Image (cartoon, rainbow, N blue to C red; front, side, top):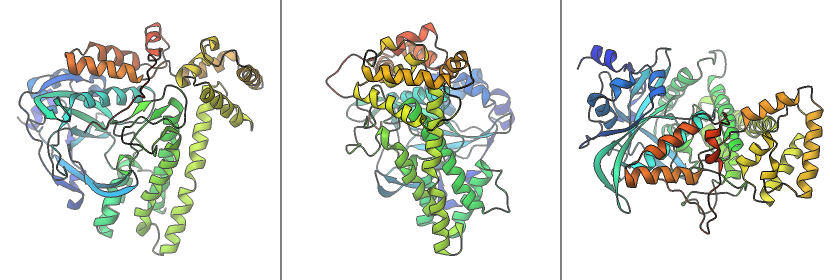
Length: 491
C-alpha cells in the first residue's frame, strides 16, 4: 500500500525524529505479529484530533496496525533504551514490551508518539514475553482517559485490540495490545541511561532534541540546559499538584516513569483514594509505602534531583558551579509545588484571593477528613453543593467551627457566592474512576466479554465536572470490606 493511500484512507502522517538520534538511544525492532487481532475499543475523538480517519482505523488494515501485524508507510518501529531508579535501586531498562511505532504529525502541526504496548519481545525484554493482558490494557485506557477529562496532563489511549492469543501470568489471560499516544516518551530514565552509558556528545544531542521538541521557547542566549532543568521542574510541580488535588496515587513513581514533557505515564498499579489518608498505598509491591499519596511530592523532588545529576556536564564546565546551579534549581521544586497545590485547594473551596491563614484552613479540613475517614472526592462535592449533612463530618464540633471560619473567609472576598460556587463546580469533580467501578468494568470485559459496563463508565468519566444526574450512581462508595484494595503492575 502506498503512502498516499495511507494518508487518504487513515490519515497517518508519520515522521521519525527519534530514529535520527544517536543509535545508543534505541534499537530498531518490529512488532511480533499476532494470530487474530480484534478491535475492542477505539478513541474516536482522539483519532480525529490526531488527523486520523476513525472509520478507516476500524477496517482490517487499520486494526492490523494496532496489532503490529502491519506497519504503516513511513513508520520506523523502535524500542527505546532507558534506565531508572526502581524503588530507589538504579538499573538498566528499556522498552521490554513496547515499541515506538512512529510520530504522528497532526493537521495543526503537533507531534505525538504512537506507541504499541504489548507488541512482543524486544532486545530490552529481560526475559519477559513482551506481551500484555487485556485487563491491564483496558485499565490504562480507562484511567488515562479519565485523567485527560480531569484536566491532568497524561499520555492517552487510542485503541485496544485483543490478539487472539493467551499469555501466561498466574493463569492464562487473553492477550491485548494498547496503542498509546504521548507528547513523547522521553523520561528521566532516558537521560540517566545516556549519562551512565553514553557519551557527553550523545547527552548534548538528547538535551538539544528535548529542548526543540518540548521547550522551543528557550533562547540560544540562555543557559539552555539549566532552562531545560527548570522547565521540567515547573511541569512536574504542576503535574504532581494536580494528582494530589484529585486524590490520584500513581503507585510506581520510578524515574523511568517520570516524563520530561510533564505527562502522567504508566498506569499499572495506580488508583484513586476514597477515604482521605496521606499514608494510602494501593500497589501490592510498595510494601514500605515509598510511593504513598502523601509522599508523591517528595518523590517527585527526588526524581528531579536524579534528572539534574544527568545534566551536570552540560550545566557548567566547572563541576562545583554545575552542582550549585542544579541544587538551586531543585530547591525551587517544593515551593512551586506548594504554590500550585495551594492555588488548587483555594479553588476547591471557592476562594479567589490569598490570605495568610488559607493554608491552616485547608489543613484543618484535611485533618478532620483523616480523623473521621471522610471520602476525599465526596467531601469536596458536598461542600460545593452545600450538602454536608451527607458527610461523616456533619454534626461534629470541629466541622461546625471550621465551616463558620470558611464562610467568613468567603465573605471577605469581592466575588459573589455564585462565583464561588461556579469555581468549586469547576474544581471539584463529580466523580473519579472509583476502584470498585473500574474493577467491575474489567471483570465484565475480561471474564464475560461484556464491554458495555466499561463503555458506560467511560461515558460518565468523560465529563467529570458536569455534575449530571447520570453521574450520581458513580459517586457511591464501595461496600465495606475487611481486605484493603490492592493493585498490581500488570506485567
